[in-house]
Length: 387
Image (cartoon, rainbow, N blue to C red):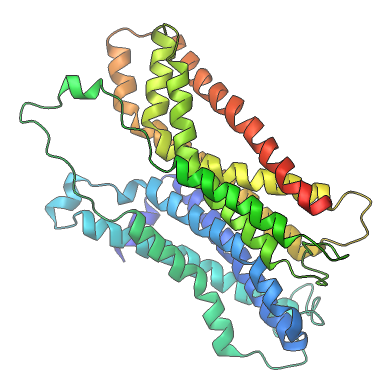
């Protein structure tokens, strides 16, 4: 009930983000139900279709966690603390809100699936996909509900884990220590593991794509190969880039401060180092998604007769939309986190041009590093697929 009351009084941008979570959850639920409908008439290809649903599912869960983290209602407030709603209760509230949004999306997916299957009548496109969704057989209700519960359960668990209360170091009695606040945060420790996982993913993809005359990565619509190894390689590569992203962003901040930096470069570098974990991880995932898209485009060119199919388009839309939405949400969250710092700089007379130039330097540094990195990973991923 408290989650519903807070949702009613939320900012329109917050409501829009929650609606996007509902839409993404509905899309993933529809893909899972389509896999179930296909399996009722084609059991041989159901496992491969289920494997393809893992990527939209992971992107949706990541986006749901990012939206819950940026939700103002999940931040501690004096009014809520006075009535006993502390950090643990706010975490439960965020998990409940995420569950509510994802459950609503699953309900929409079920209604749309039943409509296209022909079980619900009275609307346009009744039974438009009855042949593909197993309309001639009764729908196994337990299996359908289990698949629809996957997104709400995983998203709520991930939200509760990401927003769990953590112990914080005790602050000095007289306020923040100014000498400690000039000291930059330590570098993220995931860069070596990220590089190792990325290299392992590329190696697995290369090994899995050897031999055979069929395409090593068949997309939904036609399944005549075994893409499990290639999908595993892409998964390792994406995980490696997500782990390496914060470290790369941190190094970009250090690079901005080299060779006698002025006030602008010093400010841009320090802010980027401070926000490396928050911004770097979604940037790494975006890098993995874009590089995977380039590799798929190289494998399936414009003249390729293999159809992508509407389900492939839906899955790709969910992946791209959720990863970009996660990145934009992280940027807005970082901007909100440095509100006090920006206000303090404004009070001491820092010009607005200085802040805008520092923001442009941060964006330029990230683009200059992650852009070539994305192209390099895409080229390495496309070589074994097209070779």
